[in-house]
Image 1 (cartoon, rainbow, N blue to C red):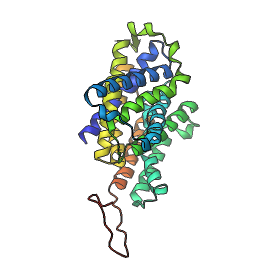
Image 2 (cartoon, helix red, strand yellow):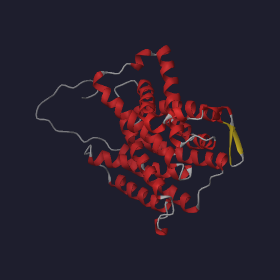
Image 3 (spheres, rainbow, N blue to C red):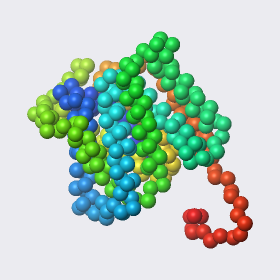
Image 4 (cartoon, helix red, strand yellow):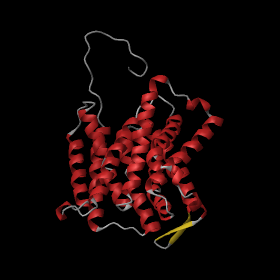
Length: 310
């Protein structure tokens, strides 16, 4: 739980630091590429020196590594960074963290695991809370494209939690290659050759608060990416996708507070009330899912099982 909370708090710096890169002149996709490439290279170098075995990719897991890079890394980060160019950081995260509801739906309809009624009630509550956040009675008060981007980020985020569960590969190697793979996938759209690298020698000001661009980029890469992803994957392996997704909703609170302090962004009354409902619904749904135990399966004759029961 402690590792999961650490991951959520570190991820909370993503939006605010990205805003400073944007203020320095980088586009959203350029910022994502800098983040992925920087984090991937740092992890690659560290692991190559201290833990080279973690970088070995089993042949039968190549497809999984590729899917992780595209969905759990490139998809989540690119869509989130694009969404915050049109929506406040806190609102974007409130929408993205309907991901636990998507995890519940996946577990029920794809894995075909029966869930308690509380799981469905939580999912319904979260969706109603999202409706309050976007003020649907006003004809959708938020930017429509920003909302779509945030919802797509939520789908990729659900994939991140599901793919990080029950891993049979080294999590450090997975995160490292995931970052490198994401950077490669994003090259055609990010076009890093067009980045104004001189911007990293300047400072950027957002809402009267100034930070060195290089410092913001370093914090984004090291804390909000390397530490956040490693802690997140480690936590989900020790807990479950359900519990990990629930604890990760703390990122919403942390990021909203950081955005208020560093960016001057504040949530409206409906966003605060709706956000509380979203988090309550996600917590209810995921707690019910996590507490569910597989029902015993009757067998006609004794079978041999391994130590883990499989």
